Length: 109
Length: 275
Image (tube, rainbow over all chains, first blue to last red; front, side, top):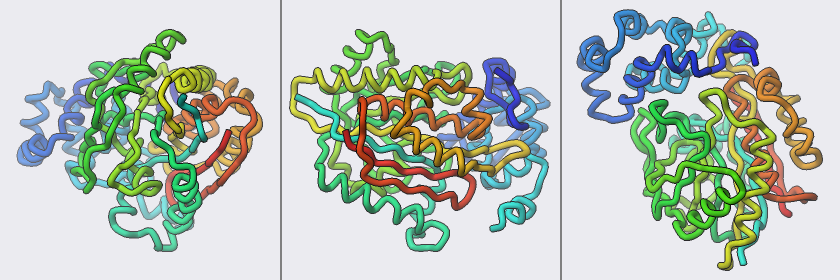
């Protein structure tokens, strides 16, 4: 099976292993208290969760495409999005190298 | 004796729950979706099921990749709602059915399907996005949830899910108590949540899939995971779970209701079948 299909990543074991710390950090954001701690100090919270400097930079830059390139699961990016006030269309379009406005124009909304 | 009285295939998505909670049922974008559930809701009121057996997937809300089960069965008396990161929706816990669920566990394992048995099984939008549309949210009908890994590859094949459906039917038909059970398969239909084709859905394939689910489920079960992802997106592969519902219905089926709409980023399908 290919691991990239129509420009989308298949979330393989290799990707899951590579991005494990970032995904694990994102998973903790399901707890309201953790969301608050993350929002108060994103790099400190991430460092405490064992994330690398690269992962901290990717989140600081809201580089959703970079996070996907790093192997993250789209479902965990949604949790980071929920904690930072970034919506699925904003995340999804960024990973595809387009703006939300360009996306809506393409879809005819 | 218990029996399968029918099956429902339905999409699920967080956006359905958001639109529902905001009261957008009659807005032009969403009315074709929500109105489409009306006949399915009426059918449920008519056939009066005692139990919903729901084959769905968790979106890294109950389970994380530290230990990610391929199949997981909820045997608890109640299922909590998962907080997906936006806070919980205004619903109470969902009742389960431990007696039936443990019977199902025994029967599945005898049939060589080996789910992780979960005393606690918080439910995310994989169940809760469509359930309040189909029933009142006082949850009178217990839910037995069976989660499938369709997120972290390798994932089960379409054929495996179709055969799982047959095993569900066998379990239901060997349950000694009178139960009228509706089996759900939920996921998809086509959607792509990241990459250059973000937001793309494939209406032709979605409708072919719903056609063939009625008439040619065996053919659908022979398609590879790669073929499902090429046609319906890497996330749209969820749609293979409808095959578990179809497998539980056995041979010929009668269509009660069908709806399809694609308002935003996902092809939303709904199919109600009777045995």
